[in-house]
Length: 186
Ligand SMILES: [Zn+2]
Image (cartoon, rainbow, N blue to C red; front, top):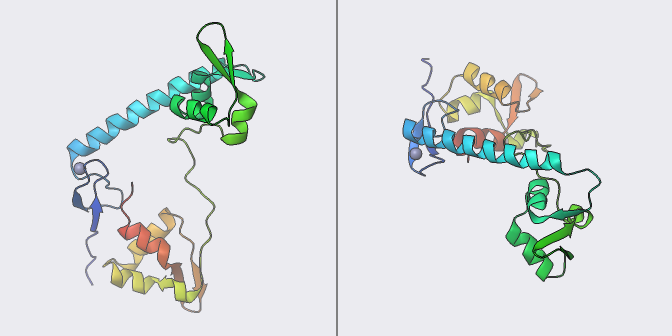
């Protein structure tokens, strides 16, 4: 049996057009779109770096922080901070003429610290259903997605999808496989 060509219909995460992904890692419809995505990523990296720089200048034990410091620490926007103040959820402290301070402790009760979305670990604890009725066998995946068995194994290893062997069959969660081959990555 000849090896099936790998093809997935995906939505370009830049322009939203549908396109045929030639590899599992193609997320953009054209080189123009991947260039835009790359530029956006660079800009985002820069923004995160600037925020990290601000965070470094805030003393650990500093309790009253400015709105910009709050944004750097928690990633919470100015608008959100003022909305929380208006609703009485967050206390506002004024010092001098124009500076507004908020309490770091109060914010910590509301938000986790900002995490860099680019370095944030992708490994999220997931619960997998490995009951045979919720799984495909390797053969079923190969047939459904027109791949050969070894390609399926390769992807399963590469994307750390759990498997379960029962007798001669290897079972793989349907949900993970359908997401892998069909789901357009955002
Ligand atoms: Zn595109």
